[in-house]
Image (tube, rainbow, N blue to C red; front, side, top):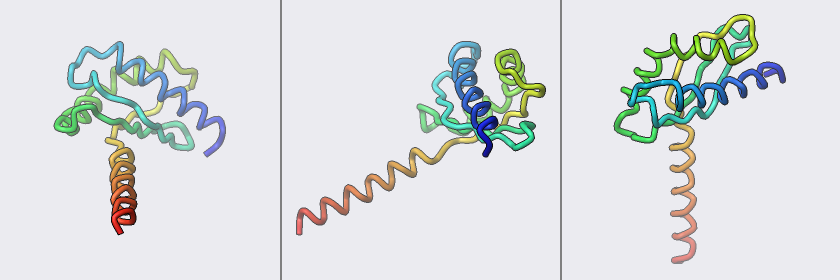
Length: 116
């Protein structure tokens, strides 16, 4: 990925975090953290990775974000300096749960070594 695309993706993450926290009135979306943004090389499409505080509401929160993507995209267009604002698709970021699972496995291995 080029430096320009990385810089724009970083700016998108920062601006989306602000928009979600302060501009959106939907209570399903309030406790969302934007973790990453993957941009297409032509800047036409952005896959936005998010985590959700309440694990029981993952599907409803992702659906609410995708339903509000038009409003979010319009707000984003006024905050970033690109010719065409990319289409936004929100997906749940499973990397944090995966990292926690790996950490638990390593911790269990260390406990077994100490017990032996």
